[in-house]
Amino acid sequence: MFAIENKVGLTEKRSRWRNATRSLDERVAGGPLRYFGSDTRGVAAIEAGLSFPFIVAMAAGLIEFGGVFYNFELMQTGVRDAARYLARTPNLASAENAARNLAIRGTIDASGPLRVKWWQVSDVQIAYKNIANPPDETTGRRLYRGGDPIVVVRVATTVDYAGLGLLNSIGLGPVRISAAHEERYVGE
Image (cartoon, rainbow, N blue to C red; front, side, top):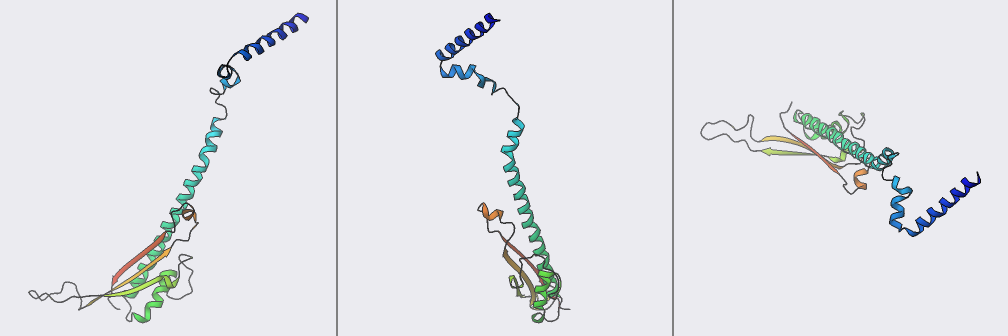
């Protein structure tokens, strides 16, 4: 038993001497770090840890852009409803407030919930355009059906998107949403 312990002690002394005479590159290449390059345990955890922030950023970006498109569609529907409403009312001036409420709330009075929570009545612009419709000299017909002039109702809105704020945090904001719709005035 004594001889075995002595032999182990002699081997340790030789390996220490051998390591002392080798260069640092030789010691690292032949030491316990040589297994580090071929060890694959925990690789999935490291990859998941490195890719997780990018996946979260992509998901947040998709949610933010989805919110922009969803609110744009709600606003586009609102201005289209308001333009259609104004195109069929007998008195344009008296129906403007009702049309603005229809755009932002979906009802002509102020009782309904807002389509988009940060969209206000003051953000909706209403304009009228007169288009000349004279009769053709040779045929006597007009270019458009109706009298002269033809009135076109335009309802438009432009607002800054007030979503989650992720686009502002990466320097892509503020995002401005614009929606407009035109309808020919036909009266009642």
